[in-house]
Image (cartoon, rainbow, N blue to C red; front, side):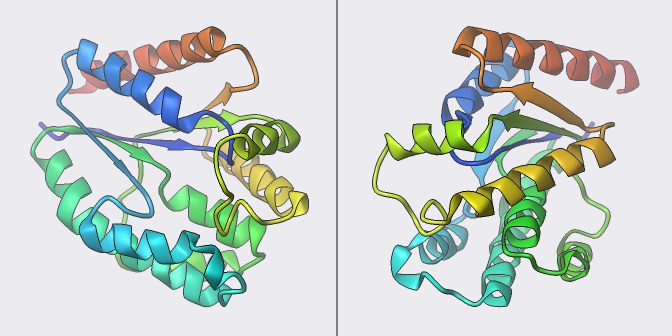
Length: 212
């Protein structure tokens, strides 16, 4: 029996860290064997690439370079962590995946999504998440929250308009791929956000158990 691949997406300040832990605990309580990981990152090589991508000293990085670094980290991550875990029957919970590339490099940077799709096919083939949870808040809310955390990384230094494009890309993907997406209103109090997540996870696990 293969495991499942769940991704959590959203702009800065939507509460991914807190809610990733909630989802993790929810899966464990349901008896799932869970691997928690992130992108870019998830492997020693991927984490090294992550540091390059987030380092403010590389502000102005060529967008095509940024895109290819994202997929380089992803190829290693899939080969070393994600695919082996799923084939072993484990559930993988990932903080961002390829949808983030469509949102940030496609929507935010304005790169041709055909380039992204070509790299997606090269690196992933037909592999896609089983469920994507999109934590959504208005950009001004997310950036205000993110600004209270720490010094901004290279992406967090982008202008509001960049994040508006990123958010819109996410919402467009949620409409296009409504079979695997669940949009969570992350602007509500935390208890209400996690209630939405619990409902979404419960429905997904029930459907998964019925087809296994």
